[in-house]
Length: 432
Image (cartoon, rainbow, N blue to C red; front, side, top):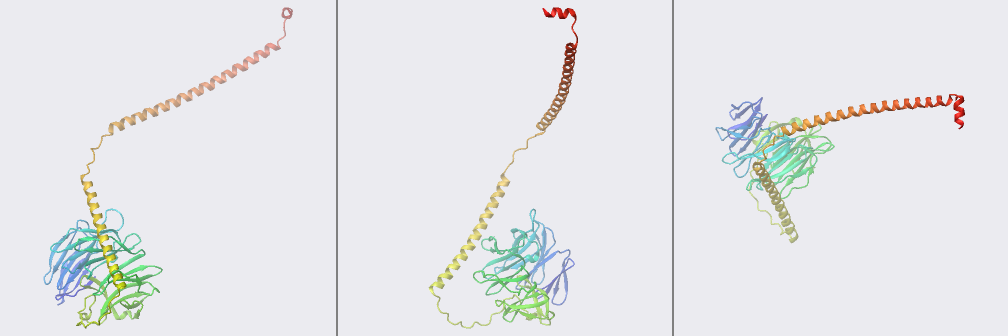
């Protein structure tokens, strides 16, 4: 993987077969680290920061303007890749990455901040789909760090913001319940854009934008084929988004999504390039000098021309905008308050778990032994009763047979006595 950067001394960072190499402007390759699993890069002015993920409970960070110094970052949990670095507008660097999850599906999404030193890791969300392309983060001019990520189950798209002053993440808001992938923020001076791919009958490219509030989702691709290989470019004073669709390359200018045009795919190179705090997929025309490519970099504004006077807003419009701003502020405040209450509840549960002392276990072996003994005696008594019952039944049957035979003999004797003839004297005496 080759990542181009804009820096006075270095022009690219390369991860190849586990070797992390940085290339200078003079074409010299400098080995930084071996056995690297993943890499994240950010450039703020002339300051370069590179994080090399080792697939363990730590990573190596290389930072500096000319000579890069290294330091170790401890994660507490085994890292599962997916690293991203971003610089905010207040001199901090944010590191997001996946960590192995003990139970459940997916991975933990973790967050650390570098100010004077690296902060303690904070869990942003659980059960996140563990692919590097499944989340995106961006610092915007509104003073918040914005984050979107795909959940593990069915991959819905969730959105959160980070309040740097309170140092808390807001609650999650569902941006799409469809199966989503490859979200990407693009921050411009005017708006914050979010692109993502969504699986419907075909994979389509969708977008939302935020100036004060988030707009409804719009479809960028035609939907005639599956959208893939999304990339961006800044040309002149206009942002453009590129995507492939059924073997063809399309381009559309920002905010004019239906004005899509087909381009020859062979005329463009697809490269990775660090633009400030984000690593973007860039479509660059072949033969175009790199110095002229100004992706994601805020362009130098031309001298401001006097703006024409705008007609004053009506009272209804002023009231509507005031109400929208109030609702947005109330939503953010409620989200932060909810997350703070949840964090306090988790701390209270952890304290209860630490303070809870279970009673000493009772030795049940003697009782179990007595129960087993009683069970054996009960079984023996039951077997003895069954045997006695069987013997009694056999004796009763034998007695009934003997009685039946005696009754038969008695009847035979009575019959023989009746049939025998009487003597002379029995007849004489019988008459008396």
